Image (cartoon, helix red, strand yellow):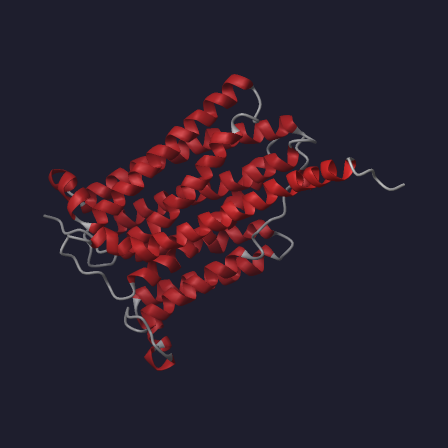
Length: 339
């Protein structure tokens, strides 16, 4: 039986409404990804303007590559972390966990690490051809060896993600985090091991916080109809761990800042140096994230379900993504001088 002419517009409107939110989300994601890519591309010029500092060669490309590397770390390690939390929830429908992005994401990290290794192989300059690369020289320097560890770590993580035990990818990813922490503090820096330990804790907590929240929210969306109680319990467990992660991030970030900016110079360097300006932007973003996390926790405690808590939590994960990109830019800017 053919539908009447009055039913056709209503059905068309319903179909458009059904398609609208999905298309809107896709466009929003694309817009945010494009905006995130602009931060490392345009950020160095803005941060360095008027400081009298000179940027290293290829700082925009290096910042973009490091943003991709950090993002890949967050997504894959966060998935493993969130799955471990989900397994602790009684009655959780583990067979309905959302599809993992781990089989694909580490290849982006591998490509970014390979690009960064190419920069190291060309003497920390932007290579213009294969003749500029001294691949064998990577094995003879500390920085080159760390770059190779990151490349091999993502390669191993990609292979583990397609194995029978995808969570085993956390081991090579841990090697990448250790290499990144050591890379951030060269041997000529005073107390470099202490600085590397601070960065190790800071980066690990940030990766688990950001990536874990992303996968927890994806899980809540899948479990909303079949096991809302399990979803609420998962979000509650994540919130308790996230509070500890935030405390560790705050403590290590504060000590790291005071190591590079003595107390008497912090206020001046936050506005007069590129590193300080970018750090100030990161601090403001983290404050917004903390406020959103607190709002989600209060809603979760007051209502007893995860429905209302998901709204600030979704905003939190997007702001965290911006924090990751700004952090990548921070690693590419010149370190402030200790006055």
